[in-house]
Length: 343
Image (cartoon, rainbow, N blue to C red; front, side, top):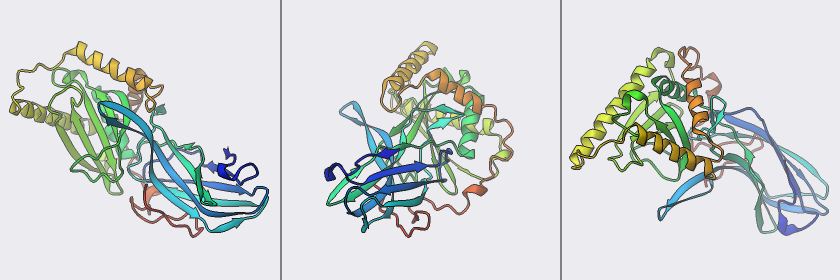
């Protein structure tokens, strides 16, 4: 995609930038490669700064209302302090190391409505401008597929997946936001819980699983936290393990509810659950971040992952070896660039 007159303040005849990305989907902790192509305008121009930014559409609540905006969650400096002559063509290859906590944009080929992108940042003559983001597709890691597949086999349905501008206390979360996946409970849990919120925080060594019960229902909002390593996925009974997590979460919620003096509050029945699922799905379908999402389609995504009965080979992470964890230094394809501080 060409960003015409990225530096609009320079007027007609200014430099033109084109960015191309490899179109292969990426996984958290992986890499994205591409090129930035510069073309000089009608006269020479001194470029002070050239960088790439990873951006996400994130929801934040203020005064009871939710707002959505772009949050920069990583930045790669490609260079600066050089002159681009009139009509000169310059090609700059780059490699972006995707942070381990980068949220998922699709599961089993089903879009989650999460908006991620890569955009160019260019500065000259004291002015800075940005190009439109190129979409970034992020699919689950094997350890994420294992947990999501187990939830599908247990009968959970996927309603929505939003990005929340907040930090989960007690976790190793490093990005300023986290992905929250809303699930409708399987039939065997209907009388105990209305909704489960799931967050998967991945890192180079493994993943933190955060579960919250009835976050929107005015209950205790009990939390469950579990740590899973990348290795040995095929040797575990994932359905049994995840089932034990859910039951422990339900017990914790019941304990907190009783302690808060709300033991007499009835848990909503099947009709209430269906109503919540409908309202949540409708909100996701109409919101900027969750645009176009349909609960049935997302349920199909979990259903597809539920077919992963044989996890053999899922823990083969050879293509992830040598990647740096969040906060490490990054190069732009050997061009001598350096990473800037995360936005």
